[in-house]
Length: 237
Image (cartoon, rainbow, N blue to C red; front, side):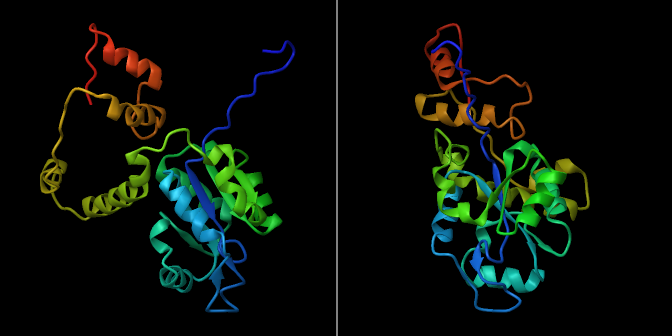
């Protein structure tokens, strides 16, 4: 290391990107054109981030039913969790999405074509990273949107969260004790000795503290591999 040069910390990974719609995700304003189409690069960006395990949501000032039906027609609706489409402040929408996901604000990102909207979110939620619509094409090349490892769980993260939301809704409508509701899910848990194949998934989950790791102790891939070959330890998954 060169003396006098500070060591730069890697950027905190983005766990959820919140999209504006008009002139950000699609070209034009929905209230003026029912047939708005996404910008050319948008679909590729959405699918790439989804494959990397980065959740995506919406904070848009639009009529909900109108905008959602357009997203469905475009084949994009399924990519978004907890969409907020209405007329309230976008900072409120981003805050609500983060709270529902149990994500820290520093792991949230927001993209919008309007400087005033970005400024409002940045003022109310200073830890949320804000991007201009002009940045869409380069998002997938930015380090905060580029996890070092993409696991099987990463590619399924959106569907796992969506399943969780459906389960929560079913639970809220269930009359009876929690134990009875859990029995209706027919859950099976398998416990086995870990192999190298599972280690990247284990490392990822211990880093996602809000999802699994209540201890605050993070195990790197190297440490896990060391434990795996250490006869004094048994690693179970």
